[in-house]
Image 1 (cartoon, rainbow, N blue to C red):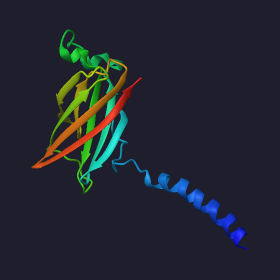
Image 2 (cartoon, rainbow, N blue to C red; image 1 turned 60 degrees about the horizontal axis):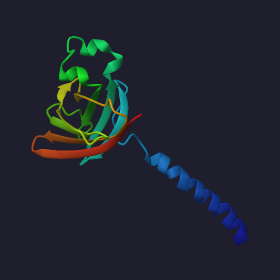
Image 3 (cartoon, one colour; image 1 turned 180 degrees about the horizontal axis):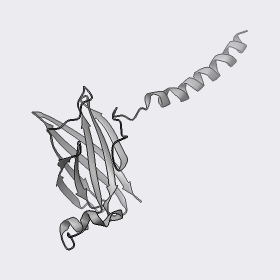
Length: 154
């Protein structure tokens, strides 16, 4: 009888152990991406605030850099946007947000974002293949929030 119970319970526990992480893995941010542009590359929650990072390859739309030939902006390959939601699920409209991007060659890009379309974005240079470390600092009133993640350019 014990052997039958063990043979019955162990597979159920094993299945639960595999299934529970799937149930707990929501988007990580609680943000609805249906109206957002670009590919989601990272999501996080910091002190109740949700961050969702989207990446847009601006080389695919040459109109975005038309007239900027020969400038630093023309050297940028992507636009990195972050959507920030407060703990009540409302979009944060009044924040200051900056990125520090370190490339595979250890070159650093220090960027301040601009608020646009409910998000904060800046152009970045991801020309080199490899792993990039992206650090974000967000000031919302007197609250300072820091985020960090890695993104690989293939």
